Length: 477
Ligand code: ATP
Ligand code: MG
Ligand code: MG
Ligand code: MG
Image (spheres, rainbow, N blue to C red):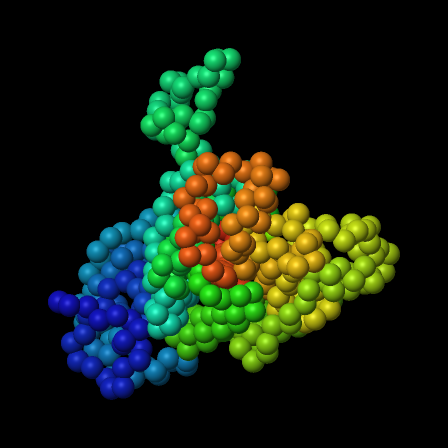
Protein backbone atom coordinates (compact mmCIF):
# COMPACT_ATOMS: atom_id res chain seq x y z
CA UNK A 1 0.00 0.00 0.00
CA UNK A 2 1.28 3.47 -0.88
CA UNK A 3 2.27 5.33 2.26
CA UNK A 4 1.46 8.94 3.08
CA UNK A 5 4.03 11.28 4.59
CA UNK A 6 3.59 12.02 8.27
CA UNK A 7 3.74 15.73 7.49
CA UNK A 8 0.75 15.43 5.15
CA UNK A 9 -1.18 13.35 7.65
CA UNK A 10 -0.61 15.92 10.40
CA UNK A 11 -1.66 18.72 8.06
CA UNK A 12 -4.78 16.89 6.90
CA UNK A 13 -8.04 18.81 7.07
CA UNK A 14 -10.23 15.76 7.61
CA UNK A 15 -10.06 12.38 9.24
CA UNK A 16 -9.19 9.62 6.78
CA UNK A 17 -9.95 5.92 6.39
CA UNK A 18 -7.38 3.32 5.36
CA UNK A 19 -4.10 5.17 5.38
CA UNK A 20 -0.60 3.81 5.64
CA UNK A 21 2.48 5.43 7.12
CA UNK A 22 6.03 4.16 7.25
CA UNK A 23 8.80 5.45 9.43
CA UNK A 24 10.98 4.85 12.46
CA UNK A 25 9.87 4.45 16.05
CA UNK A 26 11.01 7.26 18.31
CA UNK A 27 9.37 5.96 21.48
CA UNK A 28 6.82 3.34 22.46
CA UNK A 29 4.81 4.09 25.61
CA UNK A 30 2.53 1.89 27.70
CA UNK A 31 2.70 -0.91 25.15
CA UNK A 32 0.28 1.20 23.15
CA UNK A 33 1.52 4.57 21.82
CA UNK A 34 4.15 4.73 19.11
CA UNK A 35 5.69 8.12 18.35
CA UNK A 36 6.47 7.65 14.66
CA UNK A 37 8.79 9.84 12.63
CA UNK A 38 9.50 9.57 8.92
CA UNK A 39 11.79 12.56 8.46
CA UNK A 40 9.23 14.66 6.59
CA UNK A 41 8.71 16.87 9.64
CA UNK A 42 10.09 17.43 13.10
CA UNK A 43 6.75 16.25 14.49
CA UNK A 44 5.98 12.64 15.26
CA UNK A 45 2.59 11.16 14.68
CA UNK A 46 1.08 9.18 17.50
CA UNK A 47 0.06 5.67 16.45
CA UNK A 48 -2.27 3.85 18.80
CA UNK A 49 -1.66 0.13 18.72
CA UNK A 50 -4.48 -2.26 19.43
CA UNK A 51 -2.31 -4.11 21.93
CA UNK A 52 -4.94 -6.59 22.99
CA UNK A 53 -5.11 -8.00 19.48
CA UNK A 54 -1.41 -7.73 18.71
CA UNK A 55 0.83 -10.68 19.55
CA UNK A 56 3.34 -10.08 22.36
CA UNK A 57 6.10 -11.10 19.99
CA UNK A 58 5.29 -8.14 17.73
CA UNK A 59 4.87 -5.67 20.60
CA UNK A 60 8.35 -6.57 21.84
CA UNK A 61 9.80 -5.67 18.48
CA UNK A 62 8.44 -2.09 18.57
CA UNK A 63 11.66 -0.55 19.82
CA UNK A 64 13.33 2.80 19.34
CA UNK A 65 14.87 2.96 15.89
CA UNK A 66 12.84 0.12 14.40
CA UNK A 67 11.34 0.69 10.94
CA UNK A 68 7.60 0.03 10.90
CA UNK A 69 4.61 0.22 8.63
CA UNK A 70 1.27 1.16 10.16
CA UNK A 71 -2.09 0.94 8.48
CA UNK A 72 -5.29 2.29 9.98
CA UNK A 73 -7.47 5.37 10.22
CA UNK A 74 -6.46 8.94 10.75
CA UNK A 75 -8.68 9.94 13.67
CA UNK A 76 -8.99 12.97 15.87
CA UNK A 77 -6.71 12.64 18.85
CA UNK A 78 -7.76 13.13 22.42
CA UNK A 79 -4.14 13.67 23.42
CA UNK A 80 -2.91 17.19 24.07
CA UNK A 81 -0.89 19.01 21.38
CA UNK A 82 -1.90 16.84 18.45
CA UNK A 83 -4.88 17.10 16.18
CA UNK A 84 -4.68 13.63 14.66
CA UNK A 85 -3.41 10.18 15.49
CA UNK A 86 -3.36 6.88 13.64
CA UNK A 87 -5.54 4.16 15.06
CA UNK A 88 -3.60 1.16 13.91
CA UNK A 89 -5.37 -1.85 12.46
CA UNK A 90 -2.31 -3.47 10.92
CA UNK A 91 1.25 -3.19 12.11
CA UNK A 92 4.29 -4.58 10.35
CA UNK A 93 7.88 -4.51 11.58
CA UNK A 94 10.03 -3.74 8.56
CA UNK A 95 13.40 -3.63 10.26
CA UNK A 96 14.25 -4.48 13.85
CA UNK A 97 16.43 -2.27 16.01
CA UNK A 98 18.21 -3.77 19.00
CA UNK A 99 17.22 -1.31 21.69
CA UNK A 100 20.16 -2.29 23.90
CA UNK A 101 22.64 -1.38 21.21
CA UNK A 102 20.96 1.46 19.33
CA UNK A 103 23.01 4.56 20.17
CA UNK A 104 20.25 7.10 19.49
CA UNK A 105 17.94 6.38 22.39
CA UNK A 106 15.75 9.40 23.11
CA UNK A 107 17.83 11.23 25.68
CA UNK A 108 20.15 14.18 25.62
CA UNK A 109 23.36 13.25 23.83
CA UNK A 110 26.44 15.45 23.82
CA UNK A 111 27.22 17.05 20.48
CA UNK A 112 30.66 15.39 20.58
CA UNK A 113 29.07 11.96 20.90
CA UNK A 114 26.75 12.76 18.03
CA UNK A 115 29.63 13.89 15.82
CA UNK A 116 31.23 10.50 16.26
CA UNK A 117 27.96 9.01 15.03
CA UNK A 118 27.39 11.31 12.07
CA UNK A 119 25.61 8.51 10.22
CA UNK A 120 23.02 8.15 12.98
CA UNK A 121 22.74 11.63 14.47
CA UNK A 122 20.36 12.64 11.71
CA UNK A 123 17.83 10.42 13.51
CA UNK A 124 17.66 12.92 16.37
CA UNK A 125 15.16 15.76 16.30
CA UNK A 126 17.80 18.46 16.26
CA UNK A 127 19.80 17.04 13.36
CA UNK A 128 16.71 16.20 11.36
CA UNK A 129 15.65 19.84 11.73
CA UNK A 130 19.11 21.18 10.83
CA UNK A 131 19.35 19.04 7.72
CA UNK A 132 15.88 20.02 6.50
CA UNK A 133 16.69 23.69 7.07
CA UNK A 134 20.00 23.27 5.24
CA UNK A 135 18.22 21.69 2.29
CA UNK A 136 15.64 24.47 2.07
CA UNK A 137 18.40 27.07 2.31
CA UNK A 138 20.22 25.46 -0.65
CA UNK A 139 17.07 25.66 -2.66
CA UNK A 140 16.64 29.31 -1.64
CA UNK A 141 20.15 30.06 -2.91
CA UNK A 142 19.29 28.80 -6.38
CA UNK A 143 15.87 30.37 -6.28
CA UNK A 144 17.32 33.82 -5.55
CA UNK A 145 19.94 33.80 -8.28
CA UNK A 146 17.78 32.10 -10.88
CA UNK A 147 14.99 34.64 -10.39
CA UNK A 148 17.50 37.40 -10.95
CA UNK A 149 18.79 35.81 -14.15
CA UNK A 150 22.20 34.67 -12.86
CA UNK A 151 23.76 31.72 -14.68
CA UNK A 152 24.79 28.81 -12.45
CA UNK A 153 28.35 27.82 -13.31
CA UNK A 154 30.08 24.69 -12.04
CA UNK A 155 33.69 25.71 -11.61
CA UNK A 156 36.28 22.93 -11.42
CA UNK A 157 37.16 21.13 -8.22
CA UNK A 158 40.57 20.09 -9.46
CA UNK A 159 42.47 23.18 -10.50
CA UNK A 160 45.96 24.62 -10.84
CA UNK A 161 44.89 28.01 -9.45
CA UNK A 162 45.30 29.14 -5.86
CA UNK A 163 42.74 31.90 -5.72
CA UNK A 164 43.46 33.00 -2.19
CA UNK A 165 47.24 32.62 -2.16
CA UNK A 166 46.92 31.43 1.41
CA UNK A 167 48.67 28.12 0.83
CA UNK A 168 45.80 26.09 2.24
CA UNK A 169 45.46 23.67 -0.63
CA UNK A 170 45.11 19.93 -0.73
CA UNK A 171 47.37 18.54 -3.43
CA UNK A 172 45.93 16.20 -6.01
CA UNK A 173 48.09 13.49 -7.45
CA UNK A 174 47.44 11.05 -10.26
CA UNK A 175 50.39 8.88 -9.32
CA UNK A 176 50.97 6.21 -6.69
CA UNK A 177 52.36 7.89 -3.57
CA UNK A 178 55.52 5.84 -3.64
CA UNK A 179 56.18 6.76 -7.24
CA UNK A 180 55.94 10.54 -7.32
CA UNK A 181 58.20 12.35 -9.79
CA UNK A 182 61.51 13.53 -8.37
CA UNK A 183 63.52 16.61 -9.26
CA UNK A 184 67.28 16.72 -9.71
CA UNK A 185 67.90 16.94 -5.99
CA UNK A 186 65.87 13.82 -5.48
CA UNK A 187 62.92 15.58 -3.78
CA UNK A 188 59.34 15.04 -4.82
CA UNK A 189 58.45 17.40 -7.64
CA UNK A 190 54.91 18.46 -6.84
CA UNK A 191 54.80 20.55 -9.98
CA UNK A 192 54.48 17.36 -11.98
CA UNK A 193 52.39 15.02 -9.93
CA UNK A 194 49.12 15.32 -11.86
CA UNK A 195 49.85 13.87 -15.29
CA UNK A 196 52.95 16.01 -15.46
CA UNK A 197 51.34 19.16 -14.05
CA UNK A 198 50.51 20.42 -10.60
CA UNK A 199 46.96 20.60 -9.29
CA UNK A 200 45.07 20.99 -6.04
CA UNK A 201 41.53 20.94 -4.77
CA UNK A 202 39.86 24.28 -5.26
CA UNK A 203 39.82 26.80 -2.39
CA UNK A 204 37.38 29.03 -4.29
CA UNK A 205 35.76 29.09 -7.71
CA UNK A 206 36.23 32.82 -8.03
CA UNK A 207 38.97 33.13 -10.62
CA UNK A 208 37.24 30.75 -13.00
CA UNK A 209 33.92 32.40 -12.11
CA UNK A 210 35.27 35.80 -13.12
CA UNK A 211 36.06 34.55 -16.61
CA UNK A 212 32.43 33.50 -17.00
CA UNK A 213 31.02 36.71 -15.52
CA UNK A 214 32.99 38.61 -18.18
CA UNK A 215 30.86 36.91 -20.81
CA UNK A 216 27.57 35.99 -19.17
CA UNK A 217 27.24 39.15 -17.07
CA UNK A 218 26.05 37.63 -13.82
CA UNK A 219 26.96 34.17 -12.64
CA UNK A 220 27.10 32.19 -9.41
CA UNK A 221 28.80 29.06 -8.26
CA UNK A 222 27.59 26.89 -5.38
CA UNK A 223 29.80 23.94 -4.72
CA UNK A 224 32.31 22.31 -2.42
CA UNK A 225 35.60 24.01 -1.64
CA UNK A 226 38.56 22.63 0.26
CA UNK A 227 41.06 24.17 2.61
CA UNK A 228 43.82 22.30 4.31
CA UNK A 229 43.34 24.14 7.55
CA UNK A 230 44.35 22.44 10.71
CA UNK A 231 42.72 25.19 12.67
CA UNK A 232 40.24 23.26 14.80
CA UNK A 233 37.96 26.22 15.32
CA UNK A 234 34.20 26.06 15.54
CA UNK A 235 33.84 27.83 12.17
CA UNK A 236 36.39 26.16 9.89
CA UNK A 237 36.01 22.93 7.97
CA UNK A 238 38.47 21.31 5.57
CA UNK A 239 35.56 20.78 3.14
CA UNK A 240 32.78 23.33 2.97
CA UNK A 241 30.29 24.68 0.46
CA UNK A 242 30.66 28.13 -0.92
CA UNK A 243 28.26 30.41 -2.77
CA UNK A 244 30.08 32.77 -5.09
CA UNK A 245 28.25 35.25 -7.28
CA UNK A 246 30.26 37.37 -9.69
CA UNK A 247 28.78 40.33 -11.57
CA UNK A 248 30.16 42.39 -14.43
CA UNK A 249 29.73 46.16 -14.21
CA UNK A 250 29.04 46.02 -10.43
CA UNK A 251 31.20 48.05 -8.09
CA UNK A 252 31.78 47.48 -4.37
CA UNK A 253 28.57 49.23 -3.33
CA UNK A 254 26.50 47.16 -5.74
CA UNK A 255 28.25 44.12 -4.33
CA UNK A 256 27.28 45.01 -0.78
CA UNK A 257 23.69 45.63 -1.86
CA UNK A 258 23.61 42.24 -3.59
CA UNK A 259 24.99 40.40 -0.56
CA UNK A 260 22.52 42.04 1.82
CA UNK A 261 19.57 41.45 -0.45
CA UNK A 262 20.60 37.83 -0.98
CA UNK A 263 21.01 37.08 2.73
CA UNK A 264 17.63 38.62 3.53
CA UNK A 265 15.96 36.64 0.78
CA UNK A 266 17.24 33.26 1.93
CA UNK A 267 16.44 33.96 5.58
CA UNK A 268 12.93 35.09 4.70
CA UNK A 269 12.54 32.00 2.57
CA UNK A 270 13.52 29.62 5.33
CA UNK A 271 11.35 31.43 7.89
CA UNK A 272 8.39 30.84 5.61
CA UNK A 273 9.17 27.24 4.67
CA UNK A 274 10.54 25.81 7.93
CA UNK A 275 8.49 27.26 10.78
CA UNK A 276 8.29 24.01 12.75
CA UNK A 277 11.97 23.17 12.49
CA UNK A 278 13.04 26.69 13.42
CA UNK A 279 10.67 26.75 16.35
CA UNK A 280 12.10 23.49 17.56
CA UNK A 281 15.67 24.77 17.20
CA UNK A 282 14.74 27.94 19.04
CA UNK A 283 13.34 25.89 21.91
CA UNK A 284 16.48 23.79 22.02
CA UNK A 285 18.59 26.92 22.24
CA UNK A 286 16.47 28.44 24.99
CA UNK A 287 17.04 25.28 27.03
CA UNK A 288 20.77 25.58 26.45
CA UNK A 289 20.79 29.24 27.42
CA UNK A 290 19.27 28.42 30.79
CA UNK A 291 22.42 26.58 31.79
CA UNK A 292 24.61 29.62 31.06
CA UNK A 293 25.35 32.49 33.45
CA UNK A 294 23.04 35.46 32.87
CA UNK A 295 25.78 37.64 31.36
CA UNK A 296 26.56 35.12 28.64
CA UNK A 297 23.01 34.51 27.57
CA UNK A 298 22.07 35.70 24.15
CA UNK A 299 19.85 38.75 24.11
CA UNK A 300 17.64 37.51 21.31
CA UNK A 301 15.85 34.25 20.72
CA UNK A 302 16.49 32.58 17.36
CA UNK A 303 13.43 33.79 15.46
CA UNK A 304 13.87 37.29 16.80
CA UNK A 305 17.48 37.27 15.62
CA UNK A 306 16.46 36.13 12.12
CA UNK A 307 13.74 38.76 11.94
CA UNK A 308 16.22 41.39 13.08
CA UNK A 309 18.30 40.67 9.99
CA UNK A 310 15.24 41.07 7.80
CA UNK A 311 14.25 44.36 9.31
CA UNK A 312 17.56 46.18 9.79
CA UNK A 313 20.18 47.28 7.31
CA UNK A 314 23.66 46.00 7.98
CA UNK A 315 26.00 48.69 9.32
CA UNK A 316 28.59 49.66 6.71
CA UNK A 317 31.86 50.69 8.29
CA UNK A 318 35.33 51.17 6.83
CA UNK A 319 38.22 49.13 8.19
CA UNK A 320 39.87 52.37 9.38
CA UNK A 321 36.77 53.38 11.37
CA UNK A 322 36.60 49.88 12.83
CA UNK A 323 40.20 50.07 14.02
CA UNK A 324 39.44 53.38 15.72
CA UNK A 325 36.47 51.82 17.48
CA UNK A 326 38.49 48.82 18.60
CA UNK A 327 41.35 50.97 19.76
CA UNK A 328 39.05 52.98 22.01
CA UNK A 329 37.09 50.03 23.32
CA UNK A 330 37.51 48.09 26.51
CA UNK A 331 35.91 44.68 25.93
CA UNK A 332 36.55 43.66 29.48
CA UNK A 333 37.51 45.61 32.55
CA UNK A 334 41.19 44.78 32.45
CA UNK A 335 42.22 44.70 28.84
CA UNK A 336 41.79 46.94 25.88
CA UNK A 337 42.00 45.59 22.37
CA UNK A 338 45.08 47.76 21.87
CA UNK A 339 47.26 44.93 23.01
CA UNK A 340 46.50 43.17 19.76
CA UNK A 341 45.70 45.95 17.36
CA UNK A 342 48.39 48.47 17.94
CA UNK A 343 48.73 49.58 14.40
CA UNK A 344 46.61 50.17 11.36
CA UNK A 345 47.13 47.32 8.92
CA UNK A 346 46.58 44.30 11.16
CA UNK A 347 44.04 41.67 10.19
CA UNK A 348 41.04 41.37 12.49
CA UNK A 349 40.63 38.25 14.54
CA UNK A 350 37.25 36.79 15.24
CA UNK A 351 37.16 38.31 18.73
CA UNK A 352 37.46 41.78 17.17
CA UNK A 353 34.83 40.99 14.56
CA UNK A 354 32.44 39.69 17.16
CA UNK A 355 33.02 42.67 19.42
CA UNK A 356 32.06 45.06 16.63
CA UNK A 357 28.93 43.09 15.80
CA UNK A 358 27.74 41.90 19.18
CA UNK A 359 28.80 44.68 21.53
CA UNK A 360 29.38 47.84 19.55
CA UNK A 361 26.91 47.93 16.66
CA UNK A 362 24.55 45.19 17.82
CA UNK A 363 23.85 44.45 14.17
CA UNK A 364 25.46 42.61 11.26
CA UNK A 365 28.30 44.73 9.93
CA UNK A 366 29.89 45.15 6.51
CA UNK A 367 33.51 46.20 6.86
CA UNK A 368 35.06 47.61 3.71
CA UNK A 369 38.26 49.17 2.33
CA UNK A 370 40.77 46.87 4.01
CA UNK A 371 44.53 47.38 3.87
CA UNK A 372 45.79 45.94 0.60
CA UNK A 373 48.51 43.86 2.19
CA UNK A 374 46.12 41.63 4.19
CA UNK A 375 43.86 40.81 1.25
CA UNK A 376 44.21 38.66 -1.88
CA UNK A 377 45.96 39.91 -5.02
CA UNK A 378 42.88 40.37 -7.20
CA UNK A 379 41.18 43.16 -5.26
CA UNK A 380 40.75 46.66 -6.71
CA UNK A 381 43.28 49.12 -5.32
CA UNK A 382 41.73 52.35 -4.05
CA UNK A 383 42.97 55.77 -5.06
CA UNK A 384 44.77 56.10 -1.70
CA UNK A 385 47.17 53.41 -2.92
CA UNK A 386 47.00 51.45 0.33
CA UNK A 387 43.48 50.10 0.73
CA UNK A 388 41.48 47.78 -1.52
CA UNK A 389 37.77 47.60 -2.30
CA UNK A 390 37.22 44.56 -0.13
CA UNK A 391 34.27 43.81 2.09
CA UNK A 392 33.70 41.30 4.83
CA UNK A 393 30.25 40.73 6.29
CA UNK A 394 30.33 39.96 9.99
CA UNK A 395 27.53 38.23 11.83
CA UNK A 396 26.80 37.78 15.54
CA UNK A 397 28.09 34.58 17.03
CA UNK A 398 30.15 33.85 13.93
CA UNK A 399 32.28 36.75 12.74
CA UNK A 400 33.07 36.63 9.03
CA UNK A 401 30.31 35.07 6.96
CA UNK A 402 31.09 36.73 3.61
CA UNK A 403 34.33 37.86 2.01
CA UNK A 404 34.06 39.82 -1.20
CA UNK A 405 35.51 42.59 -3.29
CA UNK A 406 35.48 44.67 -6.41
CA UNK A 407 38.14 43.11 -8.59
CA UNK A 408 41.19 44.89 -10.01
CA UNK A 409 40.14 45.46 -13.60
CA UNK A 410 43.29 47.29 -14.72
CA UNK A 411 45.72 44.92 -16.41
CA UNK A 412 48.89 46.83 -15.51
CA UNK A 413 48.00 47.35 -11.86
CA UNK A 414 47.04 43.70 -11.49
CA UNK A 415 50.24 42.43 -13.08
CA UNK A 416 52.32 44.71 -10.90
CA UNK A 417 50.55 43.41 -7.80
CA UNK A 418 51.13 39.82 -8.86
CA UNK A 419 54.80 40.50 -9.42
CA UNK A 420 55.13 42.07 -5.98
CA UNK A 421 53.57 38.96 -4.44
CA UNK A 422 55.59 36.54 -6.52
CA UNK A 423 52.53 35.14 -8.32
CA UNK A 424 53.50 33.59 -11.63
CA UNK A 425 51.99 35.51 -14.53
CA UNK A 426 52.47 32.56 -16.85
CA UNK A 427 50.38 30.28 -14.67
CA UNK A 428 47.49 32.75 -14.60
CA UNK A 429 47.68 33.69 -18.28
CA UNK A 430 44.08 32.60 -18.76
CA UNK A 431 42.90 34.77 -15.86
CA UNK A 432 44.79 37.76 -17.19
CA UNK A 433 42.96 37.38 -20.51
CA UNK A 434 39.84 38.75 -18.77
CA UNK A 435 41.82 41.97 -18.33
CA UNK A 436 43.37 41.86 -21.79
CA UNK A 437 40.12 41.55 -23.69
CA UNK A 438 37.18 43.74 -22.73
CA UNK A 439 38.04 44.28 -19.08
CA UNK A 440 35.46 46.11 -16.98
CA UNK A 441 34.57 46.83 -13.39
CA UNK A 442 33.23 43.69 -11.75
CA UNK A 443 32.74 42.33 -8.28
CA UNK A 444 31.61 39.34 -6.31
CA UNK A 445 31.73 37.59 -2.99
CA UNK A 446 32.07 34.22 -1.33
CA UNK A 447 29.63 33.17 1.34
CA UNK A 448 30.44 30.08 3.36
CA UNK A 449 27.22 28.09 3.23
CA UNK A 450 27.81 26.33 6.56
CA UNK A 451 28.32 29.67 8.30
CA UNK A 452 24.94 30.74 6.97
CA UNK A 453 23.38 27.49 8.20
CA UNK A 454 25.05 28.07 11.59
CA UNK A 455 23.42 31.46 11.86
CA UNK A 456 20.00 30.31 10.77
CA UNK A 457 19.89 27.24 13.02
CA UNK A 458 21.51 28.93 16.01
CA UNK A 459 24.06 26.13 16.28
CA UNK A 460 27.51 27.12 17.49
CA UNK A 461 29.84 24.56 15.94
CA UNK A 462 30.22 24.29 12.18
CA UNK A 463 30.65 20.51 12.48
CA UNK A 464 26.99 20.33 13.43
CA UNK A 465 25.51 21.84 10.29
CA UNK A 466 27.07 19.62 7.62
CA UNK A 467 26.23 15.96 7.11
CA UNK A 468 29.73 14.52 7.42
CA UNK A 469 32.16 17.15 8.68
CA UNK A 470 35.72 17.03 7.38
CA UNK A 471 38.09 18.25 10.07
CA UNK A 472 41.32 16.92 11.49
CA UNK A 473 39.16 14.83 13.86
CA UNK A 474 36.33 13.82 11.59
CA UNK A 475 37.31 12.41 8.25
CA UNK A 476 36.93 8.69 8.72
CA UNK A 477 33.52 8.33 7.09
P1 ATP B 1 38.30 33.08 7.87
O1 ATP B 1 38.87 34.46 8.10
O2 ATP B 1 37.12 32.77 8.70
O3 ATP B 1 39.35 32.01 7.87
P2 ATP B 1 38.62 33.52 5.10
O4 ATP B 1 38.79 35.01 5.07
O5 ATP B 1 39.84 32.69 5.04
O6 ATP B 1 37.73 33.09 6.37
P3 ATP B 1 37.52 33.63 2.43
O7 ATP B 1 38.69 33.18 1.67
O8 ATP B 1 37.20 35.08 2.46
O9 ATP B 1 37.63 33.07 3.93
O10 ATP B 1 36.26 32.75 1.96
C1 ATP B 1 34.94 33.27 1.82
C2 ATP B 1 33.99 32.70 2.85
O11 ATP B 1 34.08 31.28 2.93
C3 ATP B 1 34.27 33.16 4.26
O12 ATP B 1 33.72 34.42 4.50
C4 ATP B 1 33.59 32.08 5.08
O13 ATP B 1 32.20 32.29 5.15
C5 ATP B 1 33.82 30.83 4.25
N1 ATP B 1 34.95 30.04 4.73
C6 ATP B 1 36.28 30.27 4.57
N2 ATP B 1 37.03 29.31 5.08
C7 ATP B 1 36.16 28.40 5.61
C8 ATP B 1 36.32 27.15 6.25
N3 ATP B 1 37.51 26.62 6.46
N4 ATP B 1 35.20 26.47 6.64
C9 ATP B 1 33.99 26.99 6.41
N5 ATP B 1 33.77 28.16 5.79
C10 ATP B 1 34.84 28.86 5.39
MG1 MG C 1 40.76 31.53 6.43
MG1 MG D 1 38.98 36.24 6.91
MG1 MG E 1 37.74 36.43 3.90
